[in-house]
Image 1: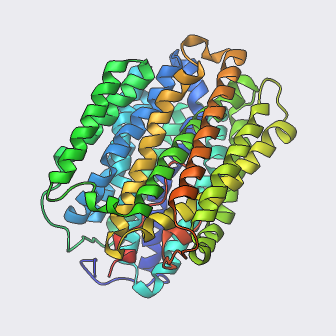
Image 2: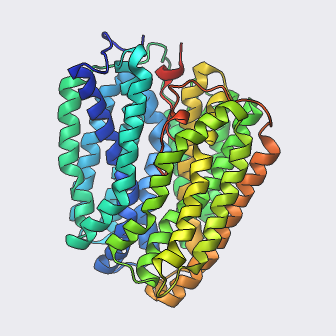
Length: 487
């Protein structure tokens, strides 16, 4: 058993408190992934920044989150998941306060980088704490409750973000995290039992984590600024990271995972697909506000069908993959999402929601709903059961890294740069180019899935798996806790 003490039943008072703490904790990071995007136009206007500044507002956060999420998970396994979860929540709240008070774009980006560190400490512990604390007989129901309530939080994120920006200011998007964080810390400290992984051993791979962060940082800096030297440096640092991982006794990313063809294929699909998603969710809300003239609230409402469809359909897609294998939906899902992006080319100045926005949003949402759960299932079943947790964590980090690089690269490739990005015609043209690039990435993901994922092999996923649960976090696949699949 993972837990230091006895597990609790879901229907007990303590069990309900555990669910509340983990749902609120995951909601903190999930809401931030959606509401900040809605606020970007107001941030740019208030802090007088160009598109590069807005790129860094998103990329600074994702950079540290993607770089440190695996290290943070290992830290929680060793030092105590509740302890690291609370540390992450406090750190996230303190950096959110800095974000809300930032007087200029430079300090806002610095605060967002710090906020990503808090999110990395917070995110892996949420579901791992729930899995370790709840009695095994109730664990599936608890994960289902966590997924469902977290899905609702993800679905209301765009609506909440738009409303906050419209009635108050973009600063409240960050300051609203403070009371939520206080509730998380209070509940976790009083009601959530501590747990560790008794099998975790050896030193933390600090060198690997540092090389990963430096590599992603150099690539991001080079892509946003259009500089070749940092990109080359980033690639060299990534090569050094691979060498270190191959030689490490306790690697952050175990090289043995990549002996599985399905694991490699699933991560290549993830790399292509989530790069497209990063570009879409960065630019779509900007297009709706800057080109189509939507208010922040209207822009948030416009994207609500995407998360609503994922909430309703993703678990069904996961169960379909159980019986028929993941390849079919991993191929059709990206193609359907790419079709949705082509329909979004209708979005421009004076766009009607019902005829120009909604069709593309619905088709795109259907594509994501078909794709995400089977992709998670493919990752979880591509390796042995005792490695499913780390495989899921690696896949999550790949997804976040690809989104980071897409947000850094797409505006330059699409011709959206400088202070003139707020011109509706300039931005609308760049949006069309970017959506075509993202559609191409989705088609690439479909081709990779069709060519590399075996056909006709049922995906045997436990009913407690995150692949069989609703999932609305658009930033990355859900992280499977070790204890939910382990012996």
